[in-house]
Amino acid sequence: MPDPLILESSLLEDLPAPHGRACEACGAPVEAWDRFCNACGAPQPQAASAAEAAPPGRAIQCGNCGAQIRVDPNVRSYTCPFCDSNYVVELPSGQAQRQPPEFVIGFAVSPAEATEKFRQWIHRNSWFRPGDLARRRVEDKLQGVYLPFWSFSMLAHSRWQAQIGEYWYRTETYTTIENGKKVTRTRTVRETEWWPLSGRHHEFYSGYLVSGSRGLQQRDAERIKPFHLAAAKRYQPHFLAGWSCEEYSVEREAALDLCQREFLRREQEAVSRFLPGDTHSGLHVETTFSHVQSDLVLLPIYISSYRYRDKVYRFLVNGQTGAVAGDKPISAVRIVLFVLAIVLLVVLAVLGIHLLNAA
Image (cartoon, rainbow, N blue to C red; front, top):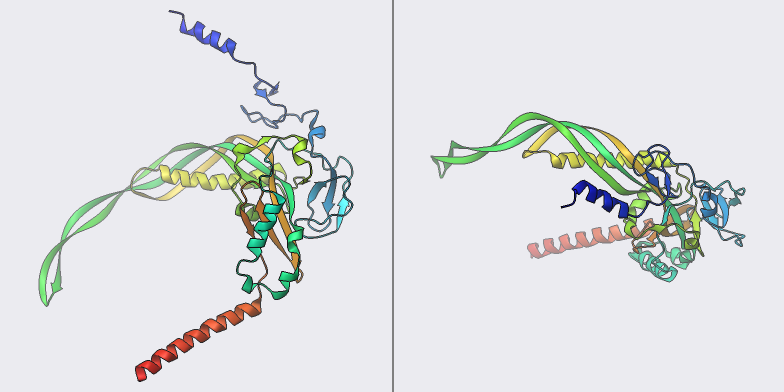
């Protein structure tokens, strides 16, 4: 029988050699586009071809909301999809070429399908919309844009302490009055026994997407999630052919801070579920993170921003799943009329009941 150590060694020799370059910190293999080592988390130098892999096109910046977007080089006028502003300036060559995207998810929803979703959405509860909004061609403003998102993964290490409670039950006797007589009854009473407990908890978190665009606030991004990251492909410039693409305006460290706050919340819930006993109180969790990794991902989103009476409203379509979200103007006059009509109906119903009772 062969020596198991020799057998293991021979099997390792048959494995394919790792691709990419070696991490300068620990020597682990790192792919060409990885900004951070998967083994130790150390930052990696930018690939020499990063500038060539940056999103193609002409970089422009909205002078109103600050969004940085790449458009076709032949475009001469542009309406910002985030704030409906036409005030844009072209960025100097190379200014917006920073970290290139690492992954991209292509559009699965066509522009025609996105427009139809917008029309269905805008006509819901149409009676409450202002009458002149129907005459506006707001659907023409719907644009498909690849937006940058930061995707993080990290390992949470927590120390916790809490009061753990376990239920136990006892039977007690009591007296009560029934039909004018004193009677004796029994009932089951639940009691809780408490004791202090502390321990550690570890969990790996990933898949939370943080908007890399100042034009798309995180609260709006949450409304059209989720995106199925399993469909992401390694970024290549040809994915953006025919589409606009925004440069990230939220830096990695700012996005990391937001993501860690979300993972802290999840870790608190995970520790709470992990605790033994029937109940607990006074839970205190101290968490640190390690093995932090990040990817810059381009996600497909349709955006329609339109102005109505000097206020900007926005509609969003998830370009992968078709999920929609948005805000639309409402007519205060029509709402008042609706409320008055409801009140009038209630008053008439009460009067009718009163007259029937009086007869």
